[in-house]
Image (cartoon, rainbow, N blue to C red; front, side):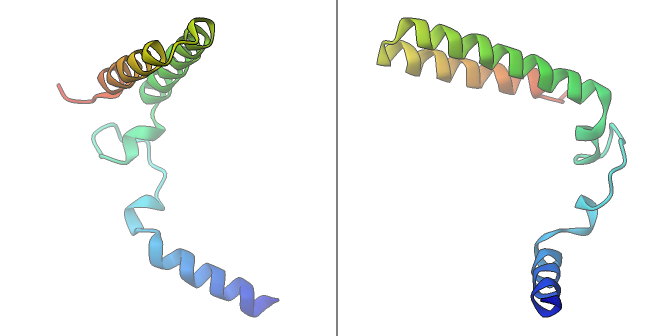
Length: 85
């Protein structure tokens, strides 16, 4: 069993980059910003937008409306999560 565990750990280390293993909440680092409160608040906003949009899609039930709403929500999600100044 330990040989299998060692194999899994070795394969995991091949795919995890060194900058992905540090959990610093540095807002200026491209990966560290996902650990900040600001980003968590934005993710919560996006989650609520998708829940509302999903409920709207369920009530409408029309495929063109579902596709239109999902494309619009995707665009809005990118706008909310964007970090450019």
